[in-house]
Length: 216
Image (tube, rainbow, N blue to C red; front, side, top):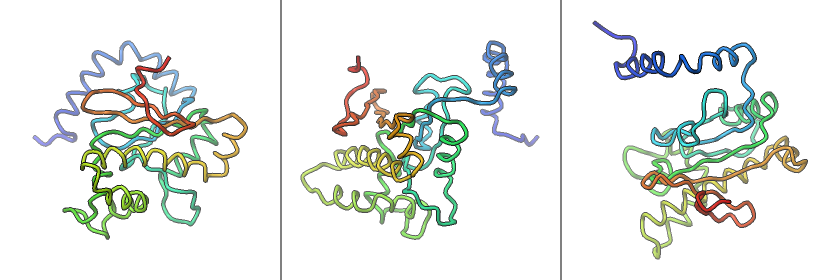
């Protein structure tokens, strides 16, 4: 018999329905009736190992999440092309009126690896990932050319540079720039180490990252 979903997803749904839903039914009903009102937007990588809802222990309706390859934000370019991340940003700031936007990067990012190794199989300059990661070309060339760094060091460096890059691009959106200037919106950077499970947060003044466990 052919199933309409993979077996492990159906099993997971049954577990959710039997174990979690009963305790959260009122929350789902309230969200359905009143809509979502998250105060925080998280732009994260689509890597299956770094789900923001899991990392930040959030329930339904608590954070508005957008995921793409390497958690990148393109610059503000209303050029008629398809910009899913930009569209989500527009919805978050104008409709949801979020007060916080977090760029969440992570270790061992495949997109960042692709940016550092654009000729590697199965990528090519004409594919979707290659085009998307070309947003980081100047930084990737600079980091990739540093022979004094190991491969892992170059990878980690570009992962964190990409976070700062995306925050800079957020500020090219006129509405975001204005809201931040008025103190109505705050931008954050964070990097998750998959190997250790440790979260590193970015100092907004210096751009340096420090372990979240060291935060007061």
